[in-house]
Length: 194
Image 1 (cartoon, rainbow, N blue to C red):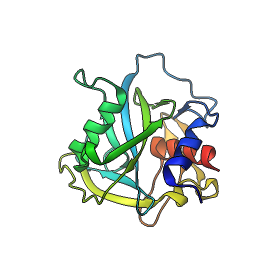
Image 2 (image 1 turned 180 degrees about the vertical axis):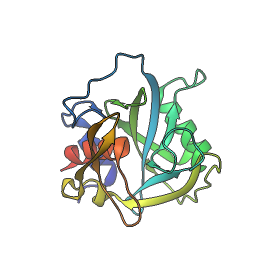
Image 3 (image 1 turned 180 degrees about the horizontal axis):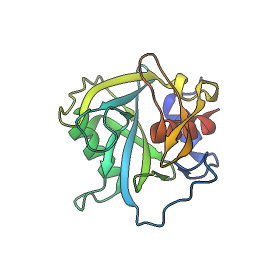
Image 4 (image 1 turned 90 degrees about the vertical axis):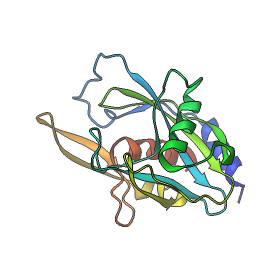
């Protein structure tokens, strides 16, 4: 089996389009707003091939308690969107930049909350003991990469939102309900890796 870096780099080289929270909903139209740039770190442990995810604090205003990648909006001090993802991962889960080997980026994902989120694929090169930032992250956990890169593990579910039924991808793992933008970004990776 090819090494992890080669498999991720090969996936990034395959054709694929940008994704959005509107992909499965033809009757939802992308709002005509200025999107806020953000970066998320899609970080995989080199030795275990497990993807690092977070459970957001239930006290947060946006997406409380949801499963997410470490990351956030690009600050003026961030030279690039990759810098934003690396800074946020260090702040949110204590992942030092020196342990991260960036493989590349996927096209940005537009969220219903007005963000253009760029997924940054990366490999964590050494042993990492997460330190969740209590104000933002209630838990850091890992999921096998093979689970979230297998298209058969994804389901389409829905709920009512703004008076209409909205469909979205899910890729549950054990007690973790991975859905929304996180699942859609993972689905885009799975499509490129399968």
